[in-house]
Length: 323
Image (cartoon, rainbow, N blue to C red; front, side, top):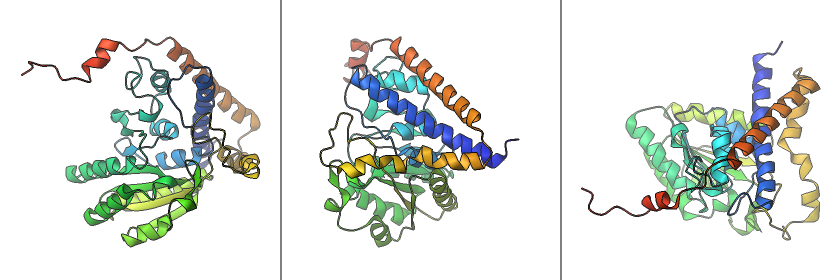
């Protein structure tokens, strides 16, 4: 008999496994030329997106980064429409015009991924202000990488969020790399000290451990919904791939790359599932079902329609003579 705790563990694992399979497939599609533009994969970081989103409500809003596939999927973006979007099809979430770095679905509170480092932060700040003005108990989440810690927009947003006691959670995915450079070469202080400078409560957890992420996120969410102002969360994680797909990663030590498997959030969760009574056959069945779901989504995306040029142009220029 599956207990509630076991069911929750399986739910977290399934979400992480879905993100992993989607991104592995994206890597292959990109290599084959079926995904235009650049893609930045979050393989190895699935626990952060999954853990945070697991304690959010549909009315909560999320602003993401250029490495935002996991955030989008964890927030509830439809897998078929996700692939349609990244494969530049008219039936995509943004009609195929947003692509990998601009996935957005306002109907579920996904405010969008963003190609500008740190740009997710003021967007989430504005959303948090809107939640506050409306008088709801919804909240906003700003995902950002450690490379954004030196960006002035983070410092300004921390100040405004603290001044106005906004329902905003700042979530830093610290994978140790600011694009091609160690974070220590980008920012002299620490996020904890930065949060303290603005008197915002800060917490840190292991970003490889989806349960630890969910616990820290839940505590922050409860406080924010209670009107206690913003929170800062930092999750230490690992980026398995390069900054972008195809990055040769010559700046990374070979020992670091060879040891990444020890930090895999999926592998780290599997012993807990076994301890909770989940049989190998049950786990394999779940994995196969997710794989079939991804296969079906890719097949559907390949049959999608190419965007119409005239329709795209209509969204760029304002029509003249319109009252």
